[in-house]
Image (tube, rainbow, N blue to C red; front, side):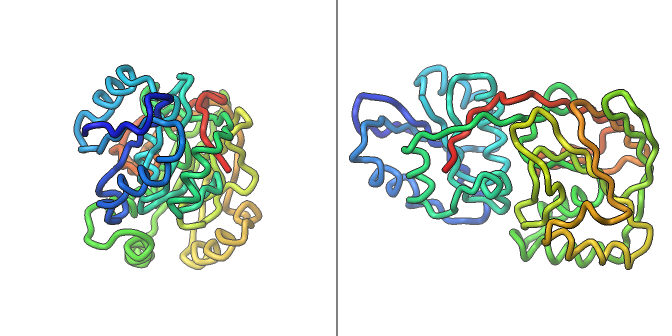
Length: 299
């Protein structure tokens, strides 16, 4: 898309996902321009297409040399931008406009456009950790293998998005909850588990508000591996309230481990999701932390 010049000064690049969250973004560009028009910034805009976005975005950043790149969308859009910015001296901004805004919620970034733009202009930032899967895929927030990934795949293939769609598929899956076998190696120590889900948590909670990792921190150089082992239907139901009261770690069939590296053997080929994107059914999953490698604009 052509760029909109405000003043020939510092640059901000806005990366807009036009279909995230089923939210109409037709007026977003003009609203952003109007809000920032009184400030010394030159604005660039890029709309994602779903094909070759990483390559095109990398080329645009190299060409325009922005000081900030703003992800306008959900967790998937944040992840795309982070892939390009990792280890660069460029700050990531977020305007939450997705079905799931887990990272923005974690960082207390409001969904209101003007309030999120103010954070971008205020220029306060913090360096956060990122996870890297199999030496190639980044996770900023929460990823998992098992039950939740299956729900996300159903959500992607269904007609109903957002919390309503997630809730519908959650209820549909309740009658078919099964544990699967995993071999888990955390910082060199190995254990075998039967679980409905294994979560790799850089953050504390999903975009739904469900807290899986109450004591997690985005910048402590470690991440948590949460293993959910309910054997009975009633145990699964008993997890719902603790999810939303930050008490999930107190359940006897939920284990939380902290580490810097983990390897998973996905014995029964469960689905994997990374920051809301389905990544297939890999037999082996390796995860490592890259400490404080991404600068994010925060309140």
